[in-house]
Image 1 (cartoon, each protein chain N blue to C red):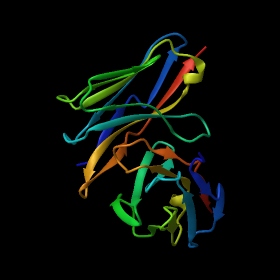
Image 2 (tube, helix red, strand yellow; image 1 turned 60 degrees about the horizontal axis):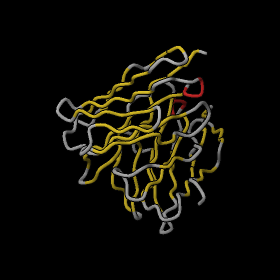
Image 3 (tube, rainbow over the protein chains, first blue to last red; image 1 turned 120 degrees about the horizontal axis):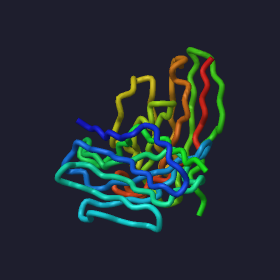
Length: 114
Length: 113
């Protein structure tokens, strides 16, 4: 079935430490894996995405890795800062009714402690 | 270019009433998806419209319905409101759906009393 599992649900790190959020997906045909950040009271916004033909992608302090064989992907944030505190959602494109739709994980609330 | 616009931003309704929410996508985007967001439940997919056709539907009761107009604007309707329908309803537009970046609106906060 269509499923994206995300963990942990909450994560607290000290400023400057790294944070890792992990997700697994069920549809082997999934080929697009975006990550969204939602700050308190704001809309979710894309921070990074990866496609199935790439194993890793980096953008400054954030990186995403994809393991197609194991069907899991992870978000890595290095040198965390207080402004990284937010809820992070992973997502995967899932086949549904002949089309691709994006299914989201349940979210990870990241707190960066100054 | 203008972002995704949702109206109204806040809404208070009574149980049993119905409500209509509106979403104007980014110009040129033909896909509009709707999500319900509640604490601890993440972003639950309601449905997706593309070029006025519903392409995908989530696991919500038939009280939840939607439509899309020729200018890609979309509306979502909830009939016979229940207390459990209280949530933030987000719409997201994208160029062609599941394989491209989704841009979210600010959401409509619905409270059912």
